[in-house]
Image (cartoon, rainbow, N blue to C red; front, side, top):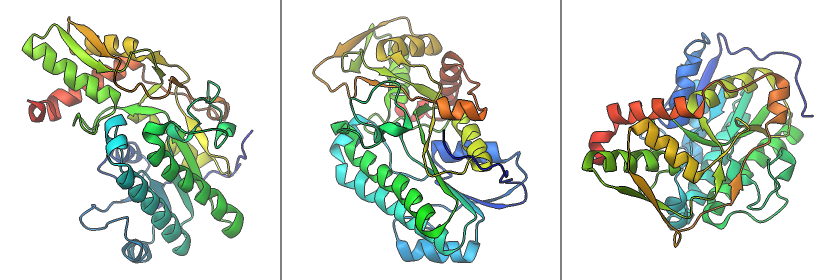
Length: 321
């Protein structure tokens, strides 16, 4: 079992910095933290480039946050990872190193760094327990992002050992929900399916093309469930081991496509392009440790996809025309 701190770290009344507050995860954190009676600190990318060490350290020294959620990252799906490897590795390495070091220097009381399920080996035993980290080769299509995130996880652990700081890390499963990226050149599978299926519905297309065979299995969590889990861990967990955040269930990409079609109201079919990469055959997190602490997700996949589609129609559909 992971270490547990019996003393709650209450967020009420604290200065809390959400790095990456305009992203899907960051904006969900802001929604969740609104009820915690804490003082929220945010800063735009144009005002502070988290890849610049001096600027980050000056900002932390001036603002003096007490708690930090590191949700900032350069993210994307298989195509983005495969075509922009240098960007994914450099940006995420620098964000992790700069924010974690600045937090140490400015004596932040607690920090939570977000990893990713991509940190686990491509062929790791399923479901993937935290102990599987660094036990095998990574999935080649997202190794650049994974390596940077592994560095962040290990930096938190190293700083706990050397400096005695209460820095923790968690790796969420695949996420979706309000604020997702629907640019097909950068999106993950859920927003890509929503955008493609919506377009097919409007045009009357008889089928939608999907990359790969449709056989890989993935776990999907609504981002509002993730935000709730992150606040839970920030207040209740203290330990060197990163903690998995997931729902403990997975579906095939084919099953996901049918669920998206139901949410969109699309009655056509799907065509699978097997010449395109599938990625890892399966990715399901072992959430035994988180469940034992008392946290469980609340949003079913079908309900979450309906919510994501509503947000897409209201906020992003016109830009996809």
